[in-house]
Length: 499
Image 1 (tube, rainbow, N blue to C red):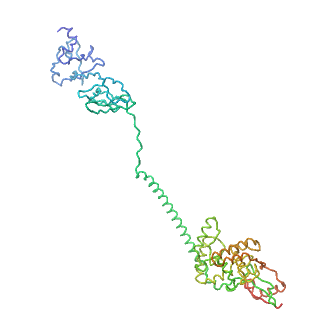
Image 2 (image 1 turned 45 degrees about the horizontal axis):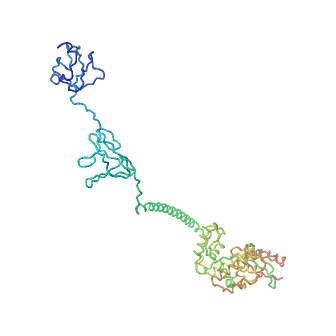
Image 3 (image 1 turned 135 degrees about the vertical axis):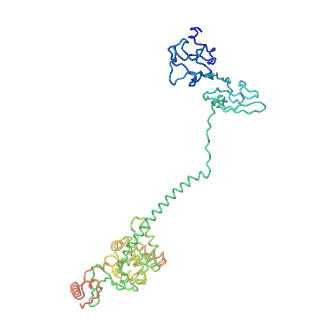
């Protein structure tokens, strides 16, 4: 072999170790190294101490990839860890030209028949378009890697075979191969259970709020009641004993007469009162007072729950205390033991003492004490002095019209006094007569006669001047020296002089 033949690389077809149809390269440059960016075909290095791969001897031969000294190139220095490579035996993949389906002619609107230009199989079915392997997903189909897929048109064409013919479904107004129009879903009707669910949740929420409110109100009410009971327990230890009323003597006016029994003067302190028995009081006055102040006086036991409830509602409506709801017994307790203060604690104490008083005294005794104790205005206490002051009569001589007017003054004697406002006093009289008629204690004729009866008023008897000042002053001085001041002013003495 000549030197020219040794320098010229062997053709790929003559090399025993290079496959045909592959470009050949020596893998080295004239300087003894690898060409830049030159591909390597993965030649396996010979085993340590063994023969070269593929039966090669490593000697110089035509087309041998190993260059030895003497083949026209300098020897390659050995490189540690680097072995010569052998070209691969597997041919590379040759890219194929994709097969595109023929274009389909446009179909008329509303047509569902398949186009005659579409390719068909031997069975008469439309031939599916073939998609090349590894192609991305197109608008007309879906490619599966490694397999030849069938294009699924976006128009969702359905083939139905009937008598050897195929009908293709196409959406009206849409071009071939286009995506189907998105259909709007109609709202599904809710079942009765789903419709009731919000209502049940609302009712559950309202129930929780109501339960919490009721619990809070109950706890608050319990606290108030407990506090009230504790306050009453403390107050009850200091409550007065109603049995002292048996020995009670109210303050009365002292009267001084001349030798003939003519009244010269009346001596009293702030209270102008004359105590009389119940039998000496006009029946009309007793009925009028009971009708307007406590119509159930002879049926209750000191307190009237109906009256208390009515007064409570009236006070709530007005926002202030406008009605007391007290019975005659409760009013007597207030006049004897308590102060005019209006409070819940005082009202409860008043009720307790009223129950005790009813256990000790009879109804007539309580009514007698009340009529002699009640205030009638102008420093006048008791029915007797009030009758003498307003009408210049004894309490036993009062008529129905006069009794109704006096009974109407108890609520506000100074304001309703006929000495100050006769018209208002007549209105109060009409109210009392109407109440008595409502209770059937008088007839309609008696009511009308009482309203039409003219009234003759008296004069205020409190703090009048003496008819004989010198005589009365001497008598009062002597009485104070002998009995004391309180006995003269509050004892209700009857003194007759010799003058």
